[in-house]
Length: 118
Image (cartoon, rainbow, N blue to C red; front, side, top):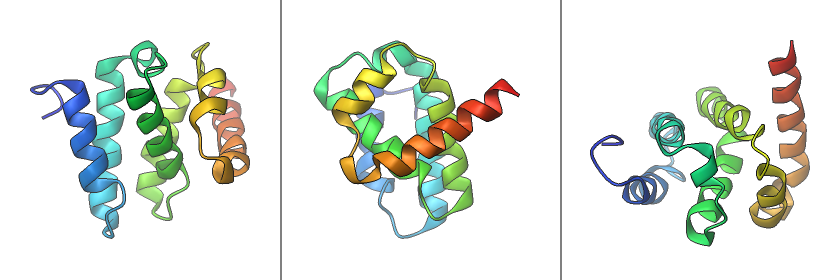
């Protein structure tokens, strides 16, 4: 699906259908496909500043990175690891990330960056 449809349609389908699903396996598959979609689209396009795309992507990643299920968190943190080195990430993060989750996510990002350096 990620390779056959337009990236925006795939993202909409993933976010509407699986991001807030009750079943952890569904959220895990959503996170895995969202990670693959981020690779296909490229980080520059995801962080281009287009409100509908960047906004929804960063909110989804922030939810995935702090999800109670370990496998979902793993994929969410992998996405953060790939997005964080981008120059536009900090600016877009401050603009679009949910305020109530910023502190916990800053800790996650710092841990991801520390693991990447070692």
